[in-house]
Length: 393
Image 1 (cartoon, one colour):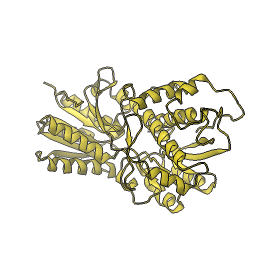
Image 2: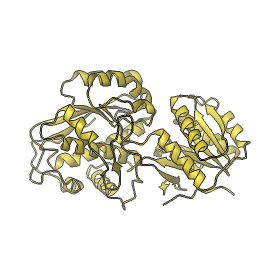
Image 3: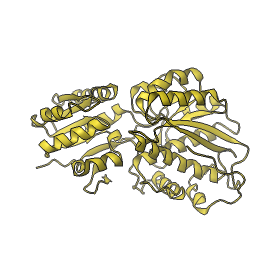
Image 4: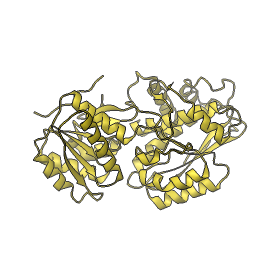
């Protein structure tokens, strides 16, 4: 019988010359108590922040979703008067998930004295290349989109929000231990990302005294995905932890499902995009995926209700995904730090304010900035891919 997992419970600023605010934006901003009720539009200039992300290319769907979520949040904030009367202007350049383009984008941003901060830049390889220049500049590097340890530096100007890949892997293994799973396989990408997932999963298994896992690697081009699937299919396994992203995920899952369907597959949030789930089709059904933000349809959580209102007000036509919610949350946290930095914020005051966010509850999603080498959120929950491709808790 198949094992079914059991889960424990580029953007422009608003037109300052317009004095009318669409009602939908007013409603979307209602949950931001520090915004001025009297200001029709943000005045006294703007805070300009810059983003290099993938809007096209192999991971364009990820970058676009997060970008749209952040835009929805900033639009709602600006419609209610901005932060201390200043609007937030998000300037975004597409890097197509290519390191040279990302570096060129960031160099242009850093050369522009009006750039207050870098916001939600995307991708482990891109962020690894950017970090030395950004850290030397002292410009705040806010909410980089990677779970890799390389961005968890001691540099105070780097502010990570999302839970790390290690946090996600640990959550998956803890769940397997809780439900009594012993025979576990691990497949991981033969790169820095995959090795981090493997290391974290192994440490968690050792701590929980689980039997040693059967492990295989997959190259970045997925050339050996079939061989990896064949090896794990002979292991008499109950569950497999997948530390893969992109093409290797697709090729491995399809190959393994063709050989065996009675083993539950557990993957990290980087796999759980609507595009990947759609590409896998029926092979995705029953997969368990860790997520670093709440289910974007879980309206029990105030932050999700706020997000849905802002998403609708923005006129977005795409699906309100986990990634869109993550972009929204990052923008809300940025705005809160900006508010705490005062009416005429400096970069230093902004960073002080960001690090002052201790156990700050954003409607069910807690931000707890402790130390530069740690992410400010450790939120991880498990979701299940249903028969219609939607995520379930």
